[in-house]
Image (cartoon, rainbow, N blue to C red; front, side, top):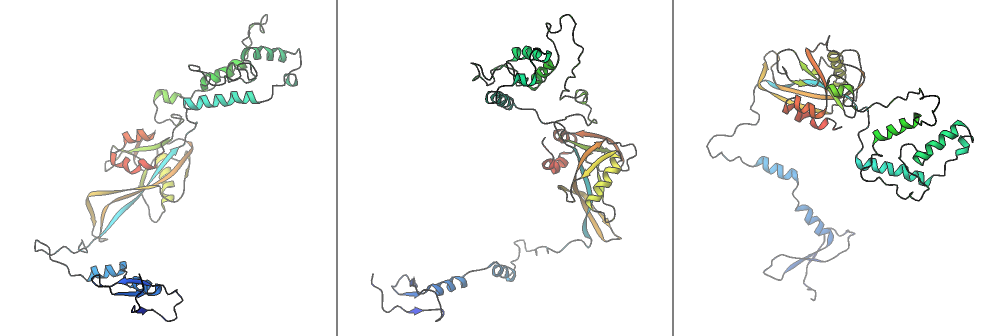
Length: 368
């Protein structure tokens, strides 16, 4: 299409450095007339047509308020009681005992680690027997007996030879218990004890007593003692307490806590709560100065203080994280009116506390 020689050129400034490109903007679709603008003019035109948030806000503020359909005037947003609304600030401590043992391995992990140890036997250099045992000595005789039974210097990978014809068969077979930690511990104990009748013939059984490793299930687990810190060694335990006095918290389990005194910080309040609730025989550590969670509890009816012209709407509880290093809780001389305590897991806390209380802390409790 040939350019129209009658097109009018307009520029925002004669000193503009932008390239003078032609943009035809139709003014009236019913006609063929058009206006051509350069790039700088087009940019200025777009900026003037923008509506900012401040402009929209001013329009809303200056717009007339339409009367409500019922004929009544809408309530004023600033209409409230003459008393100032306040909340009582409380601090609560999530005192935890971290796991003492690693978690149990999955069947896949057990098989994988056994495979890795057997693979290491295949890739490692042969054991230099005469470097450790002199030929003909009792140690050499003992070594020959053990290597004949298990075919490998390793004591916890079962009967396997990394240099024989069956060296390729290093994976765990179906039904084998070689990868079980209990079976491996028993193999180590049997290796430490001399049970060879031929080696002990004529002099009786050896008197060496090899101590068995302790199991993962403790006596506290078997008895279900929830006050004992030796239970659930693979999980995190939390200290929960029950109040003795009548009141809001009567008969309910919760984390130890109380209101702030004076101008003390949450960290200082957490340290005081631990001493006043569990005694001084606990070695604890309050982690950080910031809370890890909070809960807002509104009273059924606000408490009005006419002297201070304030109205207490409810309580805001801030939870502080703390670690149990050593010791045990003792409620004999506690100053918070506590009658009982327990060390509970996360799922046990869910059953013990109020559902609304658990909803406020469930995301800050460790799953393991």
